[in-house]
Length: 117
Length: 114
Image 1 (cartoon, rainbow over the protein chains, first blue to last red):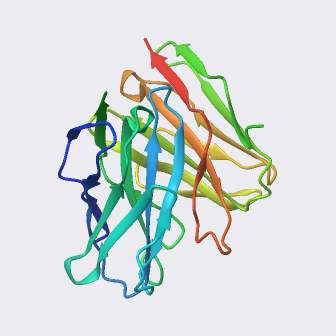
Image 2: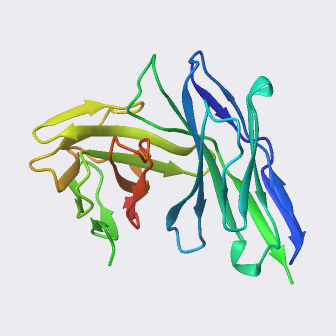
């Protein structure tokens, strides 16, 4: 069965440092898609970055990048030069590509990031 | 301008009453979803739709109905609201193209059932 696990409930870092948030997933599919979303204090949920399982290169968007370790079923989110406004809840999500229900995303429980000045 | 708009943004309902949450998208996406968010449970899928006049059950459909009268509109209906349905509800839309089903969320509706 499809499953997404975020083991870090909360993380606190100093501004301008680099933080990594962990996510492991379970799937029987050889093709799948991994996403990270950010939920701000206002409740807004925004898409950040996506990794396609068949791509070897780690995705990068702005100061967000991914550490995709396929043999470990792991997709870490790396935020470099953190800013106060990066404080939020970060969700990892997965969509299977072939078997199972390919039309929905399954979410992890989220990691709360607090960036301190 | 927001491409996925939910209404109302918050609502207080009485137990046993009927509640309708509405969602409108201007993304021209085929897929629309209703998720529920509770503390400790993350986001869980209630219903979704990939074409007008058709809906599919998600992971927690019990106690909810959905309606997709057009590509742009998707409603979530609680026929007999219960205390356990107090939560924040998010609507989302996506396409099936290059974005690989990336979801775009509305601002959420906070529902309190008393």
